[in-house]
Length: 244
Length: 181
Image (cartoon, rainbow over all chains, first blue to last red; front, side, top):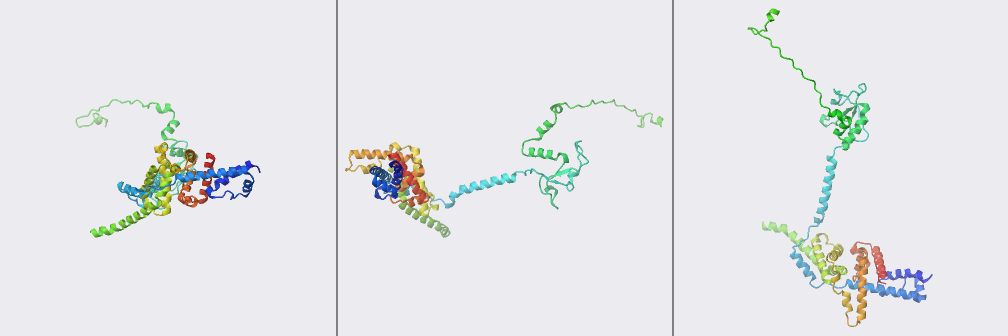
């Protein structure tokens, strides 16, 4: 093996010694390298230089962190504690901000979870309309395209059916939807729920603007003149006796 | 009434006295450690003392949860290190640093002018090389340079496994040697 190949190993082995000065240079743990150092004066010199450099580094570092604080160091600390009125905080003081943050998070999650109205699921369940009394009444203004022959579908918003004994106020709201229009109604409901559509814009889209803006047509009111019947002295219309 | 108040206050007073006694013990044990850590970063005795005192004030404030000796020393090293770095960044006192301890040692009568000049130059290069190291390598190499600190003690102070400390120390020294060649 050539000297070039030993150079990187010399750097590694030299850096691994600590402190370099206390280790004899012939105690190289790498036996192959040790044999080479014994045979090659140039590599031996390189190894010694490297170790001397590391010894200087170690001495320099040790000098940087050597020394002791002044004799009155503790007295200074005590006087600063007294001057600044520092007292040990209770052990749980450090946990207070963490606890407060955790509580705030819990409250926030609670508000977001409970305060939000339930979302409709993608699939809806169809239940017979019989139990829901108000929904059974047919609409007087039902659109003409509603197929009257089919039983209307009741969409119960993906919730459980009302239990026996539940009050009407606690029951899930149910809507009568013509069977052919259920998918469209669900799409409209979901879009409205997610804020992607609102009633006004849908109405505007469904009805031509000219239709909306057309002035209200009112038939002309014709008032015929009043006919006054003349009364006789007894308060009866004149001519009634003759008519009888 | 006074007796009743005293009976409630007495445990608190005893606890305070016990805390103070323990803190005094830690102060005596670890003041040199804090000072040396600060000195390693700041390389100025006055600044290092000031920072070490500040670290002890903070330690006293949090002493209720730092009563364990090892925990106290590890906390003290980390706090002193951070405070020293903050001071360096804020004050930019690098140029105004006083003659280092290393230079004081070199000012002995046996040293020639050339020796002192060479040592001064080497020290400046070492300081620059040290600043080039990443923080995690620098703190390991400085703590390991403190007299009496082996890799196990450094690991305990930094909360690191001994193997990690050895590895970082090896890489730090290798990098310093490469920079100072």
